[in-house]
Length: 331
Picture 1 (cartoon, rainbow, N blue to C red):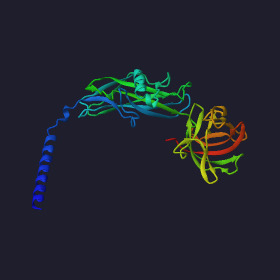
Picture 2: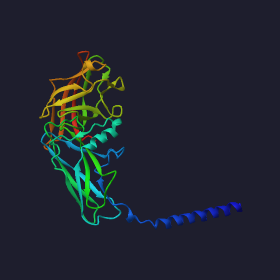
Picture 3: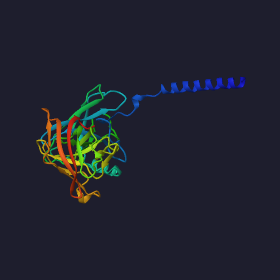
């Protein structure tokens, strides 16, 4: 017992000694000698970090827009030295389209296919100069956006930027370039609470399952698909009650096409027409329905009432009438 006690004391003293040495050693570090660099600062959490020579990517949600609408997003730069800026720092930011090819190649496994934002979308003129004031570490600039009439909602547009010069310090090797991927939602997009009725003309035991939380997901300038966040963890599909058990119709999901005033002009199947899916299913509009999306005074969706069919083997199998009440923007 005595030997164990003495050994324990020895270990304790040794640990304290090492701890003291480590603490003393840390006092000799001169953090002011670390490199002073300028870099792109976070605009939200990065969607992709720099890897394989590719730039960091920030995902910019521009919200719901129609042709001619304007908005903006921020680009941020900072001085990442140990101290505040010793004087005003001029940081010049410019476009570098070559960053897109490098990024797409590095992220080929994720099927990255970003392309330069089309002409007219970005209203700001580059290069731009941001000034980090003396005694601070951060500067911000707004990039103005206007949605052109030929905007392709299915394209992966992005704005690739580089810091081309800085008046103080160095340009960061990892964060001296950045890609801002741009996502636009159409004006019908959002999360809705849905109630309604369903009649299956071939199986009376298949019953409606409401209420639902449904996202109307932008698939084009005037089209939105029906995404159920509670179906299989989130899925494009129409669920129902099958004799007391939850189920859904495979290869069927309505895609609503609106006109500029919110009238539903047609309904298609997300999984293609009857000839292009194994279930032989298609979708169509029931013209006897209200088939209209209304908006509030701010242009935010308010309520959609719509009636539609599911066809199978060329005949109407399912009759659906639904009321969508807007909750919030999609997450």
